[in-house]
Structures are given as structure tokens and as C-alpha cells.
Amino acid sequence: MKLSEIKEILTSAESVNFKLENGGFVPEHFHITEVGIITKDFIDCGGTVRHEKVANFQLWDANDFEHRLKAGKLLNIIKLSEKVLGMEDAEIEVEYQNGTIGKYDLDFNGNHFILKNKTTACLANDACGIPSEKLKKSLSELPVNNVCTPGGGCC
Image 1 (cartoon, rainbow, N blue to C red):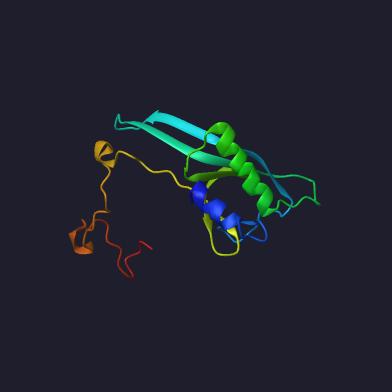
Image 2: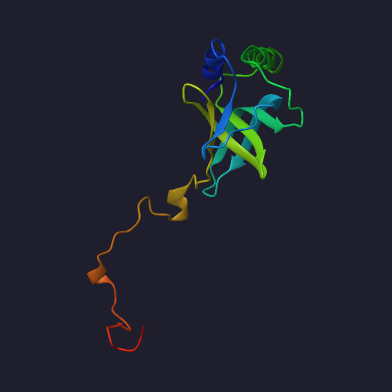
């Protein structure tokens, strides 16, 4: 989800709730402790220089059980961040500590913001020799060694 998309949703949202892909929820008394820009410059395993920039939200589960972040307040924090930090309309990455600090993509299902699990991947498959698909082999092509047969005593 891009920054412009969350701003659009927040203009008419009644509440701000974050749900994990596993069905659990971020406690409703969470705080957004940071809104910022994270820039990552790196070289992948194939030697290609890459540059990534994301809008970052950090969620924090405090012991402030009476706290509820309103949609308008979050929208104002985003607008201030855009103005002061010069934030672009970048993809949003959410940091949330659930055991350890996790990084999530953000989606919206019409009622809740969904923290979508991020995964790692090789960005240079061709340089690493990783096939794009699993090789398919017929079982009849596999070598037959130490065949176990019923009553043969191997099982």
C-alpha cells in the first residue's frame, strides 16, 4: 500500500485497527511511535546496485490501555511527515514487535489494515544459478537402489 492509499482510507475511516495475517490483532491501545523514510542502498548477490525507499510506520504496544489512535490523528501525523521530511508517495513498510521486530507490507480489507508478512528472496536468480522453476522428473527416471519390497526385511 502506498502513502496516498492510506491517506485516502483514513479520510473516511472510523477506527484504525491492524490485523496480522495469522488472524491476531495488534492491541487496540497501540501507538505509532515513528513515521519516517527508510532508504536502503545495497548490492545484491549478482553484483547489481539497488536502491529502495519506503515510508515506515513503527507500531508499539504500550501499557497505555486507554490509548486509541484515531484516523484523523494518524492522517495528521502522515501529513506532517510529508511536509517536514519531504516524504514521497512510497510503499509503506510497518515495523511491529511480535516476539521480535518484524517488517510487514500493508494492505486493507475494508475494515482493518492487514500486516502482510514479508519474505526474503534472491534478486539475482540468474547469477546464482537458481532455476526459476523446480525441475520435474518422472519417478521412472530416478535410479532404483536398495529397493524395499514387502517381506524383504528392509522395513
